[in-house]
Picture 1 (cartoon, helix red, strand yellow):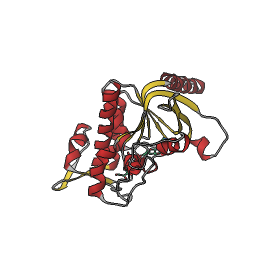
Picture 2 (picture 1 turned 180 degrees about the horizontal axis):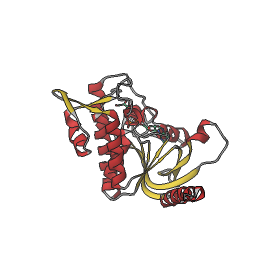
Picture 3 (picture 1 turned 180 degrees about the vertical axis):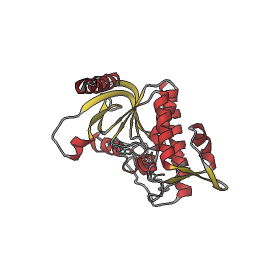
Picture 4 (picture 1 turned 60 degrees about the horizontal axis):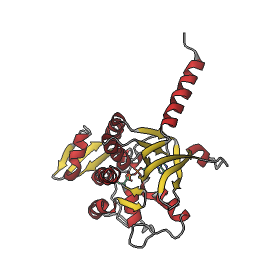
Length: 259
Ligand code: 48F
């Protein structure tokens, strides 16, 4: 005998418990794409309480669609130790080029992150940040994506963290909002503003990504495509080694800072 109201109560109570438990954490990550998922796993491994807010229903960001919906991805030798660590099967295509199933990659990145202790809240968008009196970023302002999509006039709510990691991909949407709202802001980029992403060059895009992954503003870090968008790096298309390495590097920088 199943009682529908008990099912409803179980969902509401357990979800609210997790939400309340996430009000103050070490790291808030915006975006559950490949770089955010990898970063979250390593942060949680270092015992930093880490949550991800993901705008969409699905996790995985641009990884799910492979290249032009051919849902395989490519990783290069340099990043193969990470796919191996996450137990993602790879097939050697040529020297330095491995393919992996996009769905398997997203599933295993996600599963390992959750096993490490990361909580992912989907269908929630980071729409702003919280700042302290010195304008340092120390939290995220969030709302249901459905509220954003329907343009409803509903106030958001705020979660506190020691820092925020923007892994929102090409739009670098958290950095964009900070740039708009913090007076006289200078980002840690050549012009102090968002440089904007450059057109495709896989070799250069992957190479610069490790330099563009950094603390871009006090309390605010960038990884993945958001990092190249902020610092004027090239896009690189469906090769994902750089995204994995960038997530790993962001986690290392944050762990060094917070520990
Ligand atoms: O774009 P995305 O996959 O980011 P990434 O980790 O990887 C980039 C690659 O997929 C690909 C590429 C290189 O190979 O060029 O594009 O840098 O994932 C970003 C995630 O962030 C979510 C978005 O729905 C996606 O799942 N997102 C975007 N804006 C917000 C957000 C926001 N404001 N709040 C929460 N989630």
